[in-house]
Amino acid sequence: MTGFVADPLRAEHKNTLTRRNFLLGSAAAAGGLALYSGEIARHEISIESLTLTLAKLPDAFHGYRIAQISDIHFDEYTEPSFVHRVVGEVNRLAPDLVLLTGDYISNTPMGQNFAAGAMLRCADKLRGLACPLRYAVMGNHDSLLGPPLIRAGLASASIPMLFNQNVAIERNGQRLWLAGLADPLSNVPNLQQTIPVNADGPVILLCHAPDYADNVLAHGYDAVVDVMLSGHSHGGQVRLPIVGALHRVYGAKKYVQGMYQLGGMQLYVNRGIGTVGVPFRLNCPPEITLFTLKNSG
Image (cartoon, rainbow, N blue to C red; front, side):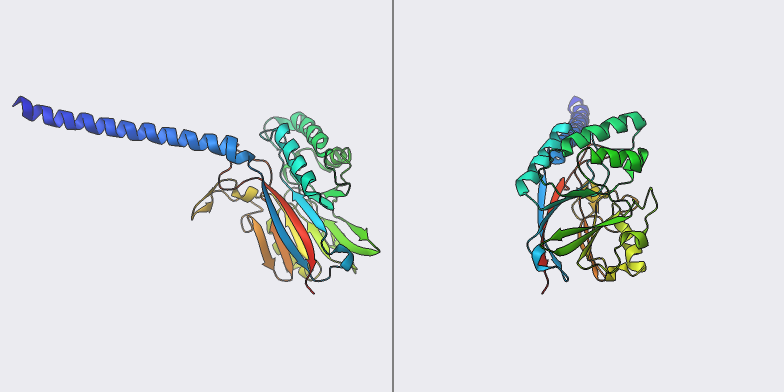
């Protein structure tokens, strides 16, 4: 009878060990994934090189190269050393123009004083951009400080901020237009004021939140705007096979990453540099986009 009692006990002990091994293995795998997402994947810079075809592109801008960076979120999780690396990568690409599409800081419980210091530290790193021609717009997190402080911080790095404004970029007597909207989530964007009237060249619209592209379409401005450049989404920040982005934020629920054709306008959504909420990225590396302009004709 002893043998009969021992067999079930031995089986139960074996099952307990199996469950324990499974739990330990799962915990180790989760810990390893968190370490990878937080320390490795979060710092893997991806250079996305695209040809941007514009119908009205003047000959002077054929081959013109534009670098876009977005969503730095300095320095809640985004370390100064990482932004230094990003600036170095942009400089290595040697673009003709650098565009920044918002969220230089994070709106966190650490408050306005921390954010103000973070903006100055971020601007100090951005001062290292070698390209003399650069422009920026605000993001929703930047509203913690407001347009005057963000504008002043960027100005200290010689980066003009467009806030419902436009500016012409001239080359050999020909023009390319930049139009920069106030962030749709935290300010009041004004398309009529922002989009140039009778533009004598292509129009590139900077707008932090990509879903605002539907408003551009609804007002018929896709007939004027050639391409809209956005950020905000972080590409979902954590992406799983088949499932895709685990979390889609308001303002980027529809357009999450990459290129979209919307009526007569192209939309590109940059995955950003930093993180917010949690310091993790998975299958969604930080991005620097390099556009090379080409005439469709």
